[in-house]
Amino acid sequence: MKIENPNPIQWRFSERATQLQSSFIREILKITQQPEIISFAGGLPSPATFPVDVMKEAFDKVLTDSGKVALQYGPTDGYLPLRQWIADRLSEGGAKIVPEQVLMVSGSQQALDLLGKVLIDEGSKVLVETPSYLGALQAFSVYRPEFVSVQTDDHGLVPESLDNVAQGARLLYALPNFQNPTGRTLSLERRQQLVETCARLGLPLIEDDPYGALSYKGAPLPKMVAMNPDGVIYMGSFSKVLTPGIRLGYVVAPLGLIRRLELAKQASDLHTSQLTQMVVHHVVKDGFLDQHIPTIRQLYGDQCQVMLDAMDQHFPQAVTWTRPEGGMFIWVTLPKHIDAMALLDEAIKHKVAFVPGSPFYANSPETHTLRLSFVTVPPERIRAGIEILGKLIASKL
Ligand code: PMP
Image (cartoon, rainbow, N blue to C red; front, side, top):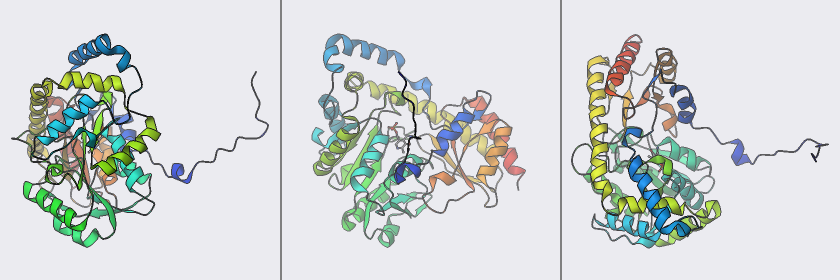
């Protein structure tokens, strides 16, 4: 029997819900996923790197050997052998990280939400890089902080600038390796300076590091969490080194904070899939990543170089860009009068797409910036797309 509604149902959204904003990138992905468009807009890892057969075999093995456990509810903090593996890996840098400090999450994006829930009140001052990861701005925004943009230069975040803005702040959110969106890396000296400054100011530092393993040139720089495990919250992810579809990440923090995050996670989704965690543990425990990650680095490094070469050839002199040493992104700065949003409209008409830079700024967007990703586009299409983009930019000078 169907019940009629004699009165209209009163849907009253929370104030929080009325302020939710769609991620600009997810919106433009709808357009740019059309196959005829050469899209430098995606932030997606290359599916060519997904170890489908290895995952298939691992799912089969886990379900055969431990199906009843894998398909049961699991503990909120996560599957202990995997947490142990993560703690051991992070301890290789010299710091002693214990599994109790590791909370498994459903993609590191969930860690951003949980950190917001646990550390941010309405109006809390939250320090972010200029520009910063859009998904973090979106996750934190739900808790209505006052974002304060911290100065950055060609070498990333400027530690000296913190003293002027850190008064009363709840946290600093930083991306030291191959930053999303700029591709910049924070030097060893700056990492030390930053950790020291935060320690002196008593300021919690979040180190978001999904791209850290994807270095094209030499060994990755030391992690900031290894320099001060009592003051740094570390976020890691299997999305860029294995596959993003399994939604598996982790957050490492001092025990008091981990307990709060665990409670917040309990309320949110009880726990992250036990099956997925057991499968990933099965895949990584014997060193699979040590042979797999170099193949990702090779592919991304080669494609990055193709894009940089094409930019050298086709972009006008007045344009500048970053030269990343790892990760997935190049950041472009156009002459000030060129609006990247308007440029995108035209570029799409010419079947090329990118992400305008404005959404990555918490305050005062620089409208003449844009982000390019080279990881999912084959070399010949990278060259063709950059040539088109170069001509379009030149036509605006
Ligand atoms: N942090 C940064 C800087 C990212 O770029 C991303 C993914 N684009 C995430 C966190 C979230 O990653 P995931 O939830 O897939 O672990």
